[in-house]
Length: 72
Image (cartoon, rainbow, N blue to C red; front, top):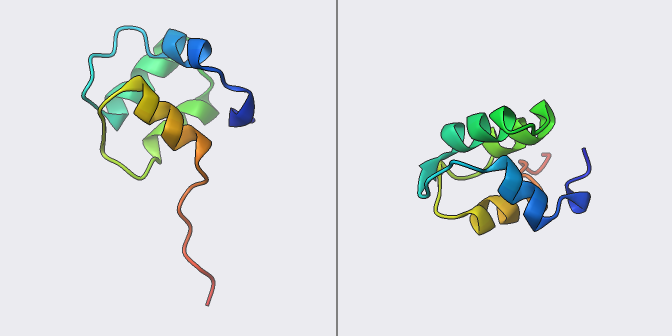
């Protein structure tokens, strides 16, 4: 899924019922329960933080490329 097409209102729909701050596993589970794709939930689970303070922080994590180790 191209997260560039994910808008704030769609993300807010996926995050309905989440009380921030929240652990990333809880956020991912809520997103799946609210209709998010498994790919989107996996991106939340793989975010570089263990906990999100707000929906905006989730959006930021989804829009930034994942941290990858530099090849040696």
